[in-house]
Amino acid sequence: MSQPIITIENLSVGFQSGKSVNQVTYNVSLDIKRGETLALVGESGSGKSVTANAILRLLPKSSTRYLSGHIHYDGIDMMRCSEREMRGVRGNRIGMIFQEPMMSLNPLHKIGRQLCEILAIHRGTRQREAQKKALEWLQKVGIRNPEKRLESYPHELSGGERQRVMIAMALINEPELLIADEPTTALDVSVQAQILDLLKDLQREMGMAMLFITHDLSIVRKIADRVAVMQMGRLVETNTMTEVFERPQDPYTIKLINSDPSGEPVPVDMTAAPMFEVKDLRVWFPVKGGVLKRVKDHIKAVTDVSFLLRTGHSVGLVGESGSGKSTTGMAILKLLESTGQILYRGEDISAFNRKQMLPIRSKMQVVFQDPFSALNPRMSVAQIIGEGLRVHQNLTPEQEDKVICDVMRDVELDPETRHRYPNEFSGGQRQRIAIARALVLKPAFILLDEPTSSLDRTVQFQVLTLLKNLQQKYNLTYLFISHDLHVVKSLCHYTLVLRQGQVVEQGETQTLFSEPQQEYTKQLVALS
Image (cartoon, rainbow, N blue to C red):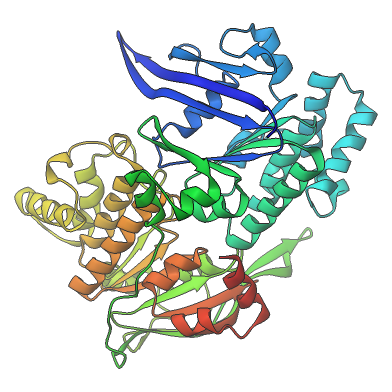
Protein backbone atom coordinates (compact mmCIF):
# COMPACT_ATOMS: atom_id res chain seq x y z
CA MET A 1 0.00 0.00 0.00
CA SER A 2 1.26 3.49 -0.88
CA GLN A 3 2.41 5.95 1.77
CA PRO A 4 -0.05 8.55 3.12
CA ILE A 5 0.11 11.89 1.32
CA ILE A 6 -1.30 13.60 4.43
CA THR A 7 -1.58 12.49 8.07
CA ILE A 8 -3.73 14.12 10.77
CA GLU A 9 -2.78 13.20 14.35
CA ASN A 10 -4.94 13.95 17.43
CA LEU A 11 -6.43 17.17 16.02
CA SER A 12 -8.47 19.11 18.57
CA VAL A 13 -9.95 22.48 17.54
CA GLY A 14 -11.96 25.02 19.53
CA PHE A 15 -13.42 28.49 19.03
CA GLN A 16 -12.93 31.24 21.59
CA SER A 17 -15.95 33.21 22.74
CA GLY A 18 -15.08 35.75 25.39
CA LYS A 19 -12.90 34.00 27.95
CA SER A 20 -14.16 30.47 27.21
CA VAL A 21 -13.18 28.08 24.39
CA ASN A 22 -15.85 25.89 22.83
CA GLN A 23 -14.13 22.69 21.67
CA VAL A 24 -15.60 21.25 18.42
CA THR A 25 -13.21 18.40 17.46
CA TYR A 26 -11.55 15.88 19.79
CA ASN A 27 -8.30 14.05 18.91
CA VAL A 28 -9.18 13.37 15.27
CA SER A 29 -6.63 11.09 13.58
CA LEU A 30 -6.77 9.99 9.94
CA ASP A 31 -4.59 9.72 6.83
CA ILE A 32 -5.13 9.80 3.07
CA LYS A 33 -3.00 7.77 0.68
CA ARG A 34 -1.92 8.83 -2.81
CA GLY A 35 -4.64 8.21 -5.40
CA GLU A 36 -7.32 7.17 -2.90
CA THR A 37 -10.63 8.80 -1.95
CA LEU A 38 -11.42 9.08 1.74
CA ALA A 39 -15.05 10.05 2.46
CA LEU A 40 -15.58 12.00 5.69
CA VAL A 41 -19.24 11.58 6.68
CA GLY A 42 -21.51 12.71 9.49
CA GLU A 43 -24.32 15.13 10.30
CA SER A 44 -24.10 18.92 10.28
CA GLY A 45 -22.08 20.07 13.28
CA SER A 46 -20.08 16.83 13.52
CA GLY A 47 -16.79 18.62 12.75
CA LYS A 48 -16.23 17.49 9.13
CA SER A 49 -15.67 20.94 7.60
CA VAL A 50 -13.70 22.18 10.62
CA THR A 51 -11.28 19.24 10.18
CA ALA A 52 -10.96 19.87 6.43
CA ASN A 53 -10.49 23.64 6.80
CA ALA A 54 -7.85 23.07 9.50
CA ILE A 55 -5.67 21.28 6.92
CA LEU A 56 -5.27 24.54 4.98
CA ARG A 57 -5.65 26.77 8.06
CA LEU A 58 -8.75 28.41 6.58
CA LEU A 59 -10.56 28.76 9.92
CA PRO A 60 -11.00 32.31 11.34
CA LYS A 61 -7.64 33.33 12.81
CA SER A 62 -9.00 35.54 15.57
CA SER A 63 -11.28 32.96 17.21
CA THR A 64 -9.78 29.55 16.27
CA ARG A 65 -7.71 27.72 18.85
CA TYR A 66 -5.73 24.62 17.79
CA LEU A 67 -5.75 22.78 21.12
CA SER A 68 -3.66 19.77 20.09
CA GLY A 69 -2.42 17.75 17.15
CA HIS A 70 -0.28 17.75 14.03
CA ILE A 71 -1.07 17.75 10.30
CA HIS A 72 1.84 16.37 8.25
CA TYR A 73 1.93 16.94 4.50
CA ASP A 74 5.06 16.04 2.50
CA GLY A 75 7.38 16.69 5.46
CA ILE A 76 5.61 19.96 6.40
CA ASP A 77 3.81 20.33 9.74
CA MET A 78 0.87 22.43 8.53
CA MET A 79 -0.02 23.52 12.07
CA ARG A 80 3.33 25.17 12.64
CA CYS A 81 4.58 26.34 9.23
CA SER A 82 4.67 30.01 8.25
CA GLU A 83 1.90 31.79 6.35
CA ARG A 84 4.24 32.10 3.36
CA GLU A 85 4.72 28.31 3.26
CA MET A 86 0.93 27.84 3.55
CA ARG A 87 0.34 30.09 0.53
CA GLY A 88 2.65 27.82 -1.48
CA VAL A 89 0.43 24.85 -0.59
CA ARG A 90 -3.08 26.36 -0.73
CA GLY A 91 -4.64 26.19 -4.18
CA ASN A 92 -1.36 24.92 -5.60
CA ARG A 93 -0.52 21.53 -4.11
CA ILE A 94 -3.82 21.13 -2.23
CA GLY A 95 -7.02 22.29 -3.97
CA MET A 96 -10.43 22.82 -2.38
CA ILE A 97 -14.00 22.80 -3.72
CA PHE A 98 -16.46 24.55 -1.43
CA GLN A 99 -20.09 23.61 -0.85
CA GLU A 100 -21.82 26.65 -2.34
CA PRO A 101 -20.24 27.80 -5.63
CA MET A 102 -22.28 31.01 -5.80
CA MET A 103 -20.76 32.10 -2.49
CA SER A 104 -17.23 31.03 -3.51
CA LEU A 105 -17.04 32.69 -6.93
CA ASN A 106 -16.54 36.46 -7.14
CA PRO A 107 -19.80 37.85 -8.61
CA LEU A 108 -18.01 40.96 -9.95
CA HIS A 109 -15.40 39.14 -12.06
CA LYS A 110 -15.77 37.03 -15.19
CA ILE A 111 -15.01 33.31 -15.00
CA GLY A 112 -11.91 33.64 -17.23
CA ARG A 113 -10.37 36.30 -15.01
CA GLN A 114 -10.91 34.20 -11.87
CA LEU A 115 -9.23 31.14 -13.43
CA CYS A 116 -6.31 33.16 -14.79
CA GLU A 117 -5.79 34.83 -11.41
CA ILE A 118 -5.08 31.44 -9.75
CA LEU A 119 -2.41 30.63 -12.36
CA ALA A 120 -0.84 34.08 -12.02
CA ILE A 121 -0.65 33.88 -8.20
CA HIS A 122 0.72 30.32 -7.91
CA ARG A 123 2.63 29.80 -11.15
CA GLY A 124 3.38 33.33 -12.37
CA THR A 125 1.74 32.37 -15.69
CA ARG A 126 1.48 35.16 -18.26
CA GLN A 127 -1.96 36.33 -19.42
CA ARG A 128 -2.05 34.66 -22.86
CA GLU A 129 -0.80 31.31 -21.54
CA ALA A 130 -3.19 31.51 -18.55
CA GLN A 131 -6.20 32.10 -20.83
CA LYS A 132 -5.22 29.11 -22.96
CA LYS A 133 -4.97 26.92 -19.85
CA ALA A 134 -8.28 28.28 -18.46
CA LEU A 135 -10.03 27.39 -21.74
CA GLU A 136 -8.46 23.92 -21.66
CA TRP A 137 -9.76 23.29 -18.13
CA LEU A 138 -13.28 24.51 -18.91
CA GLN A 139 -13.28 21.95 -21.73
CA LYS A 140 -11.95 19.25 -19.37
CA VAL A 141 -14.74 19.79 -16.84
CA GLY A 142 -17.38 19.60 -19.59
CA ILE A 143 -18.52 23.23 -19.86
CA ARG A 144 -20.40 23.80 -23.10
CA ASN A 145 -19.24 26.76 -25.24
CA PRO A 146 -16.13 27.29 -23.06
CA GLU A 147 -14.91 30.29 -25.10
CA LYS A 148 -18.19 32.07 -24.36
CA ARG A 149 -18.18 31.03 -20.69
CA LEU A 150 -14.76 32.61 -20.13
CA GLU A 151 -16.55 35.94 -20.65
CA SER A 152 -19.53 35.05 -18.41
CA TYR A 153 -20.20 36.15 -14.82
CA PRO A 154 -21.11 33.50 -12.20
CA HIS A 155 -24.81 34.47 -12.12
CA GLU A 156 -25.06 33.67 -15.85
CA LEU A 157 -24.24 29.98 -15.23
CA SER A 158 -26.49 27.18 -13.95
CA GLY A 159 -25.79 25.46 -10.61
CA GLY A 160 -24.10 22.53 -12.34
CA GLU A 161 -21.96 24.83 -14.49
CA ARG A 162 -20.86 26.86 -11.46
CA GLN A 163 -19.83 23.68 -9.68
CA ARG A 164 -17.81 22.62 -12.74
CA VAL A 165 -16.07 26.01 -12.73
CA MET A 166 -15.22 25.49 -9.03
CA ILE A 167 -13.70 22.10 -9.91
CA ALA A 168 -11.65 23.71 -12.69
CA MET A 169 -10.42 26.40 -10.25
CA ALA A 170 -9.45 23.76 -7.69
CA LEU A 171 -7.63 21.54 -10.21
CA ILE A 172 -6.09 24.03 -12.66
CA ASN A 173 -2.75 23.86 -10.82
CA GLU A 174 -2.96 20.03 -10.79
CA PRO A 175 -2.81 19.51 -7.01
CA GLU A 176 -1.77 16.28 -5.31
CA LEU A 177 -4.73 16.43 -2.91
CA LEU A 178 -8.28 17.71 -3.48
CA ILE A 179 -10.60 18.56 -0.58
CA ALA A 180 -14.23 18.48 -1.81
CA ASP A 181 -16.62 19.89 0.83
CA GLU A 182 -20.20 18.78 0.00
CA PRO A 183 -19.69 19.59 -3.71
CA THR A 184 -22.95 17.98 -4.88
CA THR A 185 -25.42 18.78 -2.06
CA ALA A 186 -27.58 21.30 -3.95
CA LEU A 187 -27.49 19.51 -7.32
CA ASP A 188 -30.15 17.26 -8.86
CA VAL A 189 -29.36 13.58 -9.42
CA SER A 190 -28.36 13.76 -13.08
CA VAL A 191 -25.98 16.73 -12.55
CA GLN A 192 -24.71 15.11 -9.35
CA ALA A 193 -23.85 11.92 -11.26
CA GLN A 194 -22.02 13.96 -13.93
CA ILE A 195 -19.96 15.80 -11.27
CA LEU A 196 -19.02 12.54 -9.49
CA ASP A 197 -18.00 10.89 -12.77
CA LEU A 198 -15.97 13.98 -13.68
CA LEU A 199 -14.12 13.97 -10.33
CA LYS A 200 -13.32 10.24 -10.65
CA ASP A 201 -12.04 10.68 -14.22
CA LEU A 202 -9.81 13.63 -13.29
CA GLN A 203 -8.56 11.78 -10.20
CA ARG A 204 -7.52 8.79 -12.33
CA GLU A 205 -5.89 11.04 -14.93
CA MET A 206 -3.87 13.02 -12.35
CA GLY A 207 -3.22 10.31 -9.72
CA MET A 208 -4.70 12.68 -7.16
CA ALA A 209 -5.82 11.90 -3.60
CA MET A 210 -9.26 13.19 -2.52
CA LEU A 211 -10.92 14.01 0.81
CA PHE A 212 -14.66 13.99 0.03
CA ILE A 213 -16.93 15.49 2.70
CA THR A 214 -20.62 14.60 2.59
CA HIS A 215 -23.66 13.59 4.63
CA ASP A 216 -25.15 11.59 1.74
CA LEU A 217 -24.24 7.90 2.03
CA SER A 218 -25.49 7.08 -1.48
CA ILE A 219 -22.67 9.30 -2.83
CA VAL A 220 -20.13 7.60 -0.55
CA ARG A 221 -20.99 4.22 -2.09
CA LYS A 222 -20.23 5.61 -5.57
CA ILE A 223 -16.93 7.39 -4.92
CA ALA A 224 -15.10 6.30 -1.75
CA ASP A 225 -12.29 3.80 -1.17
CA ARG A 226 -12.35 4.32 2.60
CA VAL A 227 -14.85 5.98 4.95
CA ALA A 228 -14.31 7.93 8.17
CA VAL A 229 -17.45 8.60 10.26
CA MET A 230 -17.63 11.63 12.59
CA GLN A 231 -20.10 12.33 15.38
CA MET A 232 -20.05 15.39 17.65
CA GLY A 233 -16.41 16.19 16.86
CA ARG A 234 -15.11 12.65 17.33
CA LEU A 235 -14.05 10.03 14.79
CA VAL A 236 -16.19 6.99 15.65
CA GLU A 237 -15.26 4.59 12.82
CA THR A 238 -12.77 4.33 9.93
CA ASN A 239 -12.67 1.44 7.48
CA THR A 240 -12.94 0.45 3.83
CA MET A 241 -16.17 1.43 2.10
CA THR A 242 -17.27 -2.20 1.84
CA GLU A 243 -16.64 -2.93 5.54
CA VAL A 244 -18.44 0.22 6.73
CA PHE A 245 -21.59 -0.53 4.71
CA GLU A 246 -21.68 -4.31 5.11
CA ARG A 247 -20.32 -4.66 8.66
CA PRO A 248 -20.65 -1.29 10.48
CA GLN A 249 -19.28 -1.39 14.03
CA ASP A 250 -20.41 1.83 15.72
CA PRO A 251 -24.12 2.36 16.64
CA TYR A 252 -23.99 5.84 15.06
CA THR A 253 -22.75 4.42 11.73
CA ILE A 254 -25.59 1.87 11.81
CA LYS A 255 -28.05 4.71 12.49
CA LEU A 256 -26.72 6.73 9.51
CA ILE A 257 -26.97 3.75 7.15
CA ASN A 258 -30.54 3.02 8.31
CA SER A 259 -31.66 6.65 7.84
CA ASP A 260 -32.11 6.45 4.07
CA PRO A 261 -35.70 7.45 3.14
CA SER A 262 -37.84 4.32 3.09
CA GLY A 263 -41.34 3.09 3.78
CA GLU A 264 -44.60 3.65 1.97
CA PRO A 265 -46.80 6.75 1.61
CA VAL A 266 -49.67 7.00 4.13
CA PRO A 267 -52.81 4.95 3.27
CA VAL A 268 -55.38 7.07 1.39
CA ASP A 269 -58.88 6.88 -0.06
CA MET A 270 -58.31 6.31 -3.79
CA THR A 271 -61.80 7.69 -4.57
CA ALA A 272 -61.35 10.95 -2.59
CA ALA A 273 -62.70 14.11 -4.20
CA PRO A 274 -60.19 16.11 -6.27
CA MET A 275 -58.65 19.11 -4.52
CA PHE A 276 -56.86 20.40 -7.64
CA GLU A 277 -57.53 19.68 -11.31
CA VAL A 278 -54.89 21.28 -13.50
CA LYS A 279 -55.45 21.35 -17.26
CA ASP A 280 -52.98 22.62 -19.88
CA LEU A 281 -51.11 24.86 -17.41
CA ARG A 282 -48.70 27.15 -19.22
CA VAL A 283 -46.22 29.70 -17.82
CA TRP A 284 -44.31 31.57 -20.50
CA PHE A 285 -42.19 34.60 -19.63
CA PRO A 286 -42.01 37.21 -22.43
CA VAL A 287 -38.60 38.32 -23.73
CA LYS A 288 -38.82 41.96 -24.85
CA GLY A 289 -36.41 43.88 -27.05
CA GLY A 290 -35.98 46.85 -29.32
CA VAL A 291 -36.83 50.52 -28.72
CA LEU A 292 -40.54 49.79 -28.29
CA LYS A 293 -39.88 46.82 -25.97
CA ARG A 294 -42.00 44.50 -28.08
CA VAL A 295 -42.20 40.78 -27.21
CA LYS A 296 -39.59 39.02 -29.36
CA ASP A 297 -39.73 35.56 -27.81
CA HIS A 298 -40.78 33.61 -24.70
CA ILE A 299 -38.95 31.62 -22.02
CA LYS A 300 -41.16 28.53 -21.90
CA ALA A 301 -40.93 27.63 -18.20
CA VAL A 302 -44.01 25.35 -18.13
CA THR A 303 -45.96 24.09 -21.15
CA ASP A 304 -49.32 22.25 -21.08
CA VAL A 305 -48.98 20.50 -17.70
CA SER A 306 -52.11 18.57 -16.63
CA PHE A 307 -52.74 16.43 -13.53
CA LEU A 308 -55.22 15.60 -10.75
CA LEU A 309 -54.47 15.95 -7.01
CA ARG A 310 -57.00 14.25 -4.73
CA THR A 311 -57.77 15.34 -1.16
CA GLY A 312 -55.41 13.74 1.38
CA HIS A 313 -53.01 12.54 -1.34
CA SER A 314 -49.41 13.52 -2.16
CA VAL A 315 -48.30 14.24 -5.73
CA GLY A 316 -44.56 14.46 -6.46
CA LEU A 317 -42.96 16.70 -9.08
CA VAL A 318 -39.50 15.46 -10.05
CA GLY A 319 -36.92 16.57 -12.62
CA GLU A 320 -33.70 18.51 -13.06
CA SER A 321 -33.14 22.11 -11.97
CA GLY A 322 -34.92 24.36 -14.45
CA SER A 323 -37.47 21.69 -15.41
CA GLY A 324 -40.39 23.84 -14.20
CA LYS A 325 -41.19 22.12 -10.88
CA SER A 326 -41.26 25.22 -8.65
CA THR A 327 -42.87 27.33 -11.40
CA THR A 328 -45.73 24.80 -11.60
CA GLY A 329 -46.24 24.97 -7.84
CA MET A 330 -46.20 28.78 -7.73
CA ALA A 331 -48.66 28.98 -10.66
CA ILE A 332 -51.13 26.64 -8.92
CA LEU A 333 -51.04 28.93 -5.87
CA LYS A 334 -51.69 31.90 -8.19
CA LEU A 335 -48.36 33.45 -7.26
CA LEU A 336 -47.35 33.49 -10.97
CA GLU A 337 -49.41 34.45 -14.00
CA SER A 338 -50.41 31.45 -16.10
CA THR A 339 -52.83 30.24 -18.75
CA GLY A 340 -54.83 27.03 -18.70
CA GLN A 341 -57.36 25.86 -16.15
CA ILE A 342 -56.88 25.47 -12.38
CA LEU A 343 -59.84 24.01 -10.49
CA TYR A 344 -59.70 24.16 -6.67
CA ARG A 345 -62.37 21.92 -5.12
CA GLY A 346 -64.37 22.17 -8.34
CA GLU A 347 -64.16 25.97 -8.57
CA ASP A 348 -62.24 27.53 -11.47
CA ILE A 349 -59.70 29.91 -9.89
CA SER A 350 -57.68 30.45 -13.09
CA ALA A 351 -58.81 34.06 -13.51
CA PHE A 352 -59.05 34.94 -9.78
CA ASN A 353 -57.40 38.21 -8.78
CA ARG A 354 -55.66 38.93 -5.46
CA LYS A 355 -58.89 39.97 -3.71
CA GLN A 356 -60.76 36.85 -4.88
CA MET A 357 -57.89 34.60 -3.74
CA LEU A 358 -57.68 36.09 -0.22
CA PRO A 359 -60.51 33.99 1.36
CA ILE A 360 -58.87 30.72 0.23
CA ARG A 361 -55.22 31.78 0.77
CA SER A 362 -55.20 30.51 4.36
CA LYS A 363 -56.08 27.02 3.09
CA MET A 364 -52.98 26.94 0.87
CA GLN A 365 -49.52 27.13 2.43
CA VAL A 366 -45.86 26.72 1.35
CA VAL A 367 -42.74 25.22 2.96
CA PHE A 368 -39.60 26.35 1.14
CA GLN A 369 -36.31 24.57 0.44
CA ASP A 370 -33.87 26.50 2.61
CA PRO A 371 -34.85 26.83 6.28
CA PHE A 372 -32.02 29.38 6.77
CA SER A 373 -33.30 31.99 4.31
CA ALA A 374 -37.04 31.23 4.67
CA LEU A 375 -37.23 32.48 8.28
CA ASN A 376 -36.81 36.15 9.24
CA PRO A 377 -33.75 36.27 11.54
CA ARG A 378 -35.11 39.37 13.32
CA MET A 379 -38.34 37.68 14.39
CA SER A 380 -38.77 35.24 17.27
CA VAL A 381 -40.20 31.78 16.58
CA ALA A 382 -43.56 32.85 18.07
CA GLN A 383 -43.68 35.89 15.77
CA ILE A 384 -42.77 33.78 12.71
CA ILE A 385 -45.37 31.08 13.39
CA GLY A 386 -48.07 33.59 14.44
CA GLU A 387 -47.68 35.91 11.45
CA GLY A 388 -50.42 34.16 9.45
CA LEU A 389 -52.79 34.23 12.42
CA ARG A 390 -52.47 38.02 12.64
CA VAL A 391 -53.32 38.36 8.92
CA HIS A 392 -56.20 35.88 8.66
CA GLN A 393 -57.69 35.62 12.16
CA ASN A 394 -58.69 38.00 14.94
CA LEU A 395 -57.41 36.33 18.12
CA THR A 396 -56.56 37.70 21.55
CA PRO A 397 -52.85 37.49 22.53
CA GLU A 398 -53.71 34.62 24.89
CA GLN A 399 -55.57 32.67 22.18
CA GLU A 400 -52.75 33.27 19.68
CA ASP A 401 -50.14 32.05 22.17
CA LYS A 402 -52.15 28.86 22.83
CA VAL A 403 -52.46 28.11 19.08
CA ILE A 404 -48.70 28.67 18.59
CA CYS A 405 -47.84 26.35 21.50
CA ASP A 406 -50.22 23.67 20.17
CA VAL A 407 -48.76 23.74 16.66
CA MET A 408 -45.19 23.62 18.04
CA ARG A 409 -46.10 20.43 19.89
CA ASP A 410 -47.56 19.07 16.63
CA VAL A 411 -44.16 19.48 14.91
CA GLU A 412 -42.33 18.14 18.00
CA LEU A 413 -40.78 21.44 19.12
CA ASP A 414 -40.69 22.56 22.75
CA PRO A 415 -43.14 25.51 23.15
CA GLU A 416 -40.79 26.93 25.79
CA THR A 417 -38.39 27.84 22.95
CA ARG A 418 -40.96 30.04 21.15
CA HIS A 419 -39.28 33.29 22.24
CA ARG A 420 -35.91 32.32 20.78
CA TYR A 421 -34.64 33.34 17.33
CA PRO A 422 -33.96 31.11 14.25
CA ASN A 423 -30.15 31.28 14.62
CA GLU A 424 -30.49 29.41 17.93
CA PHE A 425 -31.88 26.30 16.19
CA SER A 426 -30.40 23.53 14.03
CA GLY A 427 -31.33 23.10 10.34
CA GLY A 428 -33.85 20.35 11.13
CA GLN A 429 -35.46 22.42 13.89
CA ARG A 430 -35.70 25.42 11.55
CA GLN A 431 -37.52 23.30 8.99
CA ARG A 432 -39.94 22.22 11.73
CA ILE A 433 -40.54 25.93 12.48
CA ALA A 434 -41.29 26.49 8.77
CA ILE A 435 -43.74 23.54 8.81
CA ALA A 436 -45.39 24.94 11.97
CA ARG A 437 -45.81 28.31 10.23
CA ALA A 438 -47.58 26.56 7.34
CA LEU A 439 -49.67 24.40 9.67
CA VAL A 440 -50.89 27.09 12.09
CA LEU A 441 -53.80 28.19 9.85
CA LYS A 442 -55.03 24.59 9.52
CA PRO A 443 -54.57 24.48 5.73
CA ALA A 444 -56.01 21.83 3.44
CA PHE A 445 -53.06 21.99 1.02
CA ILE A 446 -49.29 22.48 1.46
CA LEU A 447 -46.77 23.01 -1.33
CA LEU A 448 -43.48 21.43 -0.18
CA ASP A 449 -40.66 22.84 -2.31
CA GLU A 450 -37.54 20.67 -1.72
CA PRO A 451 -38.13 20.78 2.09
CA THR A 452 -35.52 18.10 2.90
CA SER A 453 -32.79 18.63 0.28
CA SER A 454 -30.49 20.70 2.51
CA LEU A 455 -30.88 18.40 5.55
CA ASP A 456 -28.73 15.52 6.80
CA ARG A 457 -30.08 12.03 6.14
CA THR A 458 -31.04 11.41 9.79
CA VAL A 459 -32.80 14.79 10.06
CA GLN A 460 -34.40 14.25 6.63
CA PHE A 461 -35.79 10.92 7.87
CA GLN A 462 -37.28 12.66 10.94
CA VAL A 463 -38.89 15.46 8.86
CA LEU A 464 -40.38 12.93 6.39
CA THR A 465 -41.84 10.92 9.27
CA LEU A 466 -43.29 14.15 10.70
CA LEU A 467 -44.87 15.10 7.34
CA LYS A 468 -46.48 11.65 7.05
CA ASN A 469 -47.84 11.82 10.62
CA LEU A 470 -49.29 15.29 10.04
CA GLN A 471 -50.85 14.20 6.74
CA GLN A 472 -52.56 11.29 8.45
CA LYS A 473 -53.69 13.36 11.45
CA TYR A 474 -55.11 16.32 9.51
CA ASN A 475 -55.87 14.72 6.10
CA LEU A 476 -53.43 17.15 4.46
CA THR A 477 -52.87 17.29 0.70
CA TYR A 478 -49.28 17.75 -0.50
CA LEU A 479 -47.66 18.81 -3.75
CA PHE A 480 -44.08 17.69 -3.15
CA ILE A 481 -41.23 19.08 -5.28
CA SER A 482 -37.94 17.19 -5.12
CA HIS A 483 -35.00 15.84 -7.11
CA ASP A 484 -34.49 12.98 -4.61
CA LEU A 485 -36.45 9.99 -5.91
CA HIS A 486 -36.01 8.03 -2.65
CA VAL A 487 -37.83 10.78 -0.75
CA VAL A 488 -40.60 10.99 -3.38
CA LYS A 489 -41.08 7.21 -3.29
CA SER A 490 -41.43 7.32 0.49
CA LEU A 491 -44.05 10.12 0.57
CA CYS A 492 -45.93 10.42 -2.75
CA HIS A 493 -48.83 8.41 -4.12
CA TYR A 494 -48.58 9.81 -7.66
CA THR A 495 -45.61 11.36 -9.49
CA LEU A 496 -45.04 13.62 -12.50
CA VAL A 497 -41.63 13.66 -14.23
CA LEU A 498 -40.87 17.08 -15.74
CA ARG A 499 -38.22 18.03 -18.26
CA GLN A 500 -37.79 21.44 -19.89
CA GLY A 501 -41.22 22.52 -18.64
CA GLN A 502 -43.16 19.53 -19.99
CA VAL A 503 -44.48 16.32 -18.43
CA VAL A 504 -42.38 13.43 -19.74
CA GLU A 505 -44.24 10.74 -17.79
CA GLN A 506 -46.73 10.50 -14.94
CA GLY A 507 -48.37 7.72 -12.96
CA GLU A 508 -48.68 5.91 -9.64
CA THR A 509 -45.32 6.34 -7.87
CA GLN A 510 -44.38 2.71 -7.17
CA THR A 511 -45.23 1.67 -10.76
CA LEU A 512 -43.48 4.67 -12.27
CA PHE A 513 -40.21 3.89 -10.47
CA SER A 514 -40.34 0.10 -10.89
CA GLU A 515 -41.45 0.15 -14.55
CA PRO A 516 -40.48 3.50 -16.11
CA GLN A 517 -41.56 3.84 -19.74
CA GLN A 518 -39.67 6.91 -20.97
CA GLU A 519 -35.89 7.03 -21.47
CA TYR A 520 -35.48 10.15 -19.29
CA THR A 521 -37.38 8.55 -16.38
CA LYS A 522 -35.23 5.43 -16.75
CA GLN A 523 -32.10 7.61 -16.47
CA LEU A 524 -33.37 9.33 -13.30
CA VAL A 525 -34.28 5.99 -11.67
CA ALA A 526 -30.90 4.47 -12.61
CA LEU A 527 -29.03 7.43 -11.11
CA SER A 528 -30.97 7.53 -7.82
